[in-house]
Image (cartoon, rainbow, N blue to C red; front, side, top):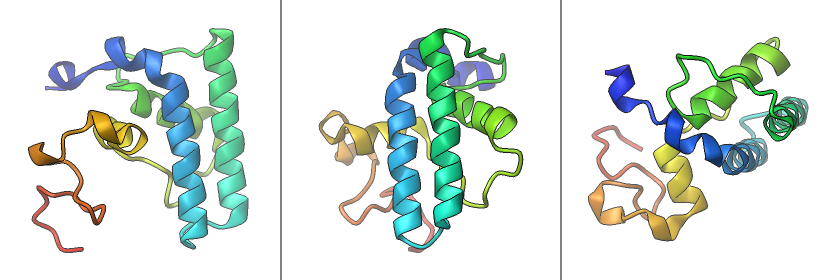
Length: 125
């Protein structure tokens, strides 16, 4: 199933957009009081280092990297975050893409509702 879901071969080119989205998400978590400023700064610094690795061509993909977000998150945790904060920005790439590029995501197919919740979810708010 992992091989079926793996999209890293296609979305590896989205590394910069994923890093930008994770940075924005971290800032939002800090603004909402879910991260301290120190935790946010640590994440932002780590994401800058991940971006440097991509830009310099030294980022190494792992066979277990399912998509660009899991690859970046793995690298952030392994290399730049000795103790990841409890709210590490981790949202599925499809949702990340819908947030960054809302016009490219059809809300009628089970995406996010206007209130930001997953339309297809059976869980409460």
